[in-house]
Image 1 (cartoon, rainbow, N blue to C red):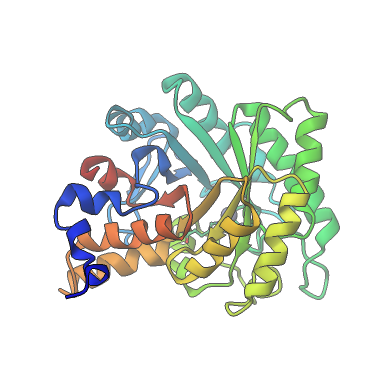
Image 2 (cartoon, rainbow, N blue to C red):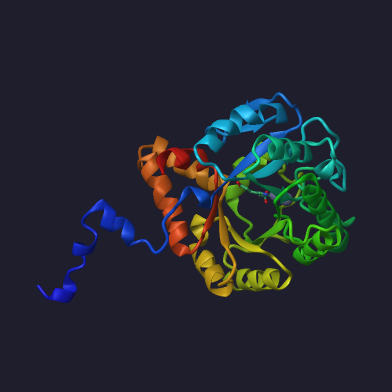
Length: 326
Ligand SMILES: NCc1[nH]cc(CCC(=O)O)c1CC(=O)O
Ligand SMILES: [Zn+2]
Ligand SMILES: [Zn+2]
């Protein structure tokens, strides 16, 4: 055989196999999405998200303490208001006594080294379940939506969030949030991670169960990207960089590895994040339960593929598992 035909010499051992990765998956690359509800003592399982619960603020120490011990470095919070009244402007989003703001304060005092991000959106808090304000005809009213989303983001920063991550997909929200953070004195204290390329995916179902954020009518296709729209995703990434995003995110992750790779090329000097969303997590579990593959092997294959595509920050419900596995 020709000398140049031999590749297997380079990866015959687990150690040399690991060297074939340009970037290795490490614990510090993981951000754990968690659901905080407004019953402070709650611990309620989410049936469609194996092993994930809605937690009350009084239970955060027992929930996250052991994970922090194992090396958990960052979380992203989603509020799940069950008791308070939802309205057209999403008032509970930044209620000073609401789940997100209470949880940020609690986590800052419990775990001084933990990096705390807050998802910023209105769909969990509006009576209609859409991510922004609506016009009378049911379409999105972009301008007041952006103002309200920036207000919520600034209130999360004031509560102590290290990062705000707008997932609403209104046009111009990155610029408005960045301006708001600067004007409130948080320009250099709070990271802005944009869900830049967020697609209108079928993979958000379990999350909407968990967060109670399914739209009461219609869908999100007029503000989330069309599945096939690689060009729009690239334009959204460039726009968000221009508007002041500190981190660029792609969501969902595994079916959109081309977009992650594009993000890495367009935003060479930004961290690239991706979100292995609820439906992806549920799929990995369902396939394992059906005997299609081994859960741990497939969890690694999916997340290492995201890293190979160029992601250096992975938001995943597998975080507690990876803290054991890595
Ligand atoms: N602003 C909504 C939001 N924030 C995070 C997720 C999905 C996360 C997941 O599926 O894990 C969604 C989905 C949606 O558009 O309904
Ligand atoms: Zn939303
Ligand atoms: Zn959201």
